[in-house]
Image (cartoon, rainbow, N blue to C red; front, side, top):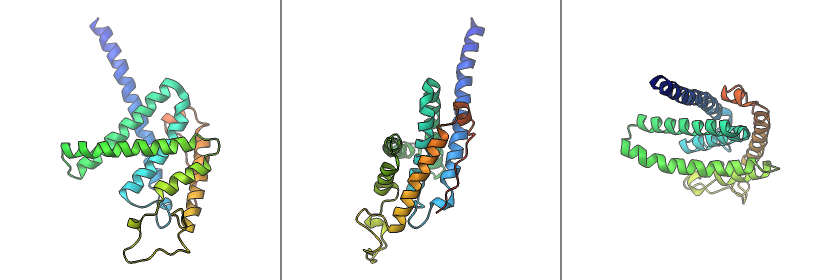
Length: 208
């Protein structure tokens, strides 16, 4: 009986460990791509902590859409990715010297914001024509221009910024980024669960 129980526990925890290794591979690949300099700068993704997290969330939304059709195995892998990401956030906060209590207080709103953004991107990606809803999501969130983003004492140029809040260059970037996301999503949807788990995929080159 002890040997049987040991075998069962070994199988359960071994599978969990394997899923976390898969999650680590996927998360590492997404993180590396989301940090590429081509995506950041003026009229692009804000090169801030929040901007980087938001852009990473977009990448996670794309991979989760590809994993979703694989039933229970897909759900377990998706959960493992969530768990790994949360652990990564936890480690990053602790490296900043934040206490256990402080980490707990910071993690909760971070995860709440993550899920809100994830749902926005997921809803957009799962429409029949994702480009327009993705553009709107970028306009209102990832690429939005607020008063806080405008340099002090520098008036907004009405020829540069339109009603939607994006500059003309920002509009071009948002349009191109939306198209890029659709291509990535379509490409990943052709992959098997095994290929996704091994991070056996590449993102197309993004030029702007």
